[in-house]
Amino acid sequence: MATEFDVIVIGGGPAGYPCAIRAGQNKLSVACIDEWQNRDGTYAFGGTCLNAGCIPSKALLESSELFHRAQTEFAAHGIGTGAVSMDVNAMQARKGKIVKQSTMGILALFKSAGVTPLQGHGKLLSGGRVEFTGKDGAKSLLSAKHIVLASGSTPMPLKNVPFDGSQIVDSWGALDFTEVPKKLGVIGAGVIGLELGSVWRRLGAEVIVLEALDKFLPIADQAVAKEAARHFQKQGLDIRLGAKVTGCEKAKDGVMLQFTDAKGAQTVVVEKVVVAIGRRPYTAELLGEGTGVELDERGFINVDHDCRTSVPNVWAIGDVVRGPMLAHKGKEEGVVVADAIAGKAGEVNYNLVPSVIYTAPEIAWVGLTEEQAKESGRAYKVGAFPFMASGRARAMEAANGFCKIVADKDSDEILGVHVIGPMAGELIAEAVLAMEYSASTEDLQRTMHAHPTLSEAMHEAALNADKLAIDIPNR
Ligand code: FAD
Ligand code: NAD
Image 1 (cartoon, rainbow, N blue to C red):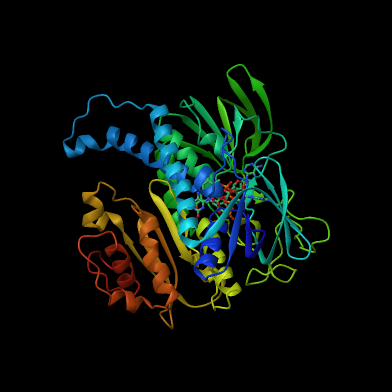
Image 2 (spheres, helix red, strand yellow):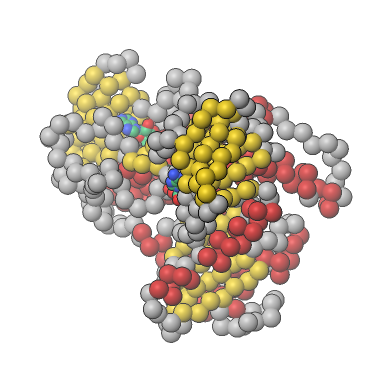
């Protein structure tokens, strides 16, 4: 095994593995160390995202959505199916297959880019050295001109509701249920709480979501948050705002959660609990003594705009550094760092990180919310278009939600785009591209969009910003 490299990446999640691949493409010698172990003890590249996050959650989301649509929409299409049933084990097996295909794919990508995969633990030592502990426990000393830390994040625990791996679980546990819980308690109405709460609700669980804040989805545009709350309520998600969980007790049929809200002290008994109150950076056994890598007060590795740590030639990317904990943000950082190491130019545009919440309807946005535009004190205008007015959305039986564009009133530059509705996560890509090129609403207005497509909603919202929409009365 080679022990000297140009680059060693510690962490093979969606930040680390693209960094290693790009370093290989840049003709640098590179190793990627990853210690992810599945429940059966097997090692797998791909980190949280591929093994226990983005990919498995979207696989279940798709299955649960099809199950729900078969029950609620097929009849309108004239399709009779008889009683629709759900085999949770088959659904989980499909998820497992998709995860395996994705994680095994990384090894093939490493091979084609000339990346040396090393499965085991990596620890940064001083002087450009890394201690590698292999699967068999054997230690070896590696060295590199540049070291990239991409160790990711782990779920935040809740002190009074400790994980027990069976009844009180984190998001990984909630992705692995083998039966639909009769009643599911979700702590935290953030992205994970809403996505996984929706999955199990669609499969038939009664779901109660306890959220400490008084405001629903404070990070989203508030018109979108209001629309989302309306749909989730209609779907039967019981979302309690201002609900602070104070403790739990094992009950006969599950867990009794204690919480306080505006009505005072309350309890609810649920079969399973998912704690989804955020994630924290993971740096356990990552930094040897005397490396000089600084952490901030919340445990994130301190980096500058270009992902340089406090130590020359040591970089850090992904969930373990500041910024949104999103796979695509980590991927961009990984690629930009690998290019910087090779002496190439590049920069992550942190103002244009798209956010997507994979619920039904889907939610996606980029840039400023209307509230943020207002707060900035600038003159702004808003254009919006409801999917109810989109022929394609109606044909899809998915005419919920809207597309909204916030633009500068004087320059017409697009400041933010917010979509709630079908395929919002796909539609937002057009907005990100437009904003990367500082497009105006007029630029979108003058861009032809195919008919009938969902993307026409973006076009019409841009037209509506100047009261020029064709397919709705302009207000
Ligand atoms: P990770 O993916 O956590 O990878 C870090 C890797 O480093 C792990 O394999 C870890 O084992 C390894 N490692 C850590 N320390 C060491 C060490 N010392 N030595 C060797 N290896 C080490 N984001 C999205 O953008 N879209 C989504 O739809 C989405 N859905 C999600 C759903 C869920 C349920 C969850 C939990 C997260 C989701 N995320 C999503 C967030 C996304 O998973 C993370 O932002 C992303 O995985 C972060 O990538 P990373 O490479 O920084 O860290
Ligand atoms: P989050 O930050 O999105 O939401 C956590 C929620 O829990 C917040 O609303 C918070 O107010 C609430 N909360 C905190 N403490 C609480 C308490 N004691 N009681 C009740 N509520 C409490 O975090 P998450 O949902 O755990 O997700 C973690 C990360 O994973 C996020 O940063 C997100 O970016 C990422 N993720 C992204 C996607 C996606 O891109 N679609 C999907 C899943 C996860």
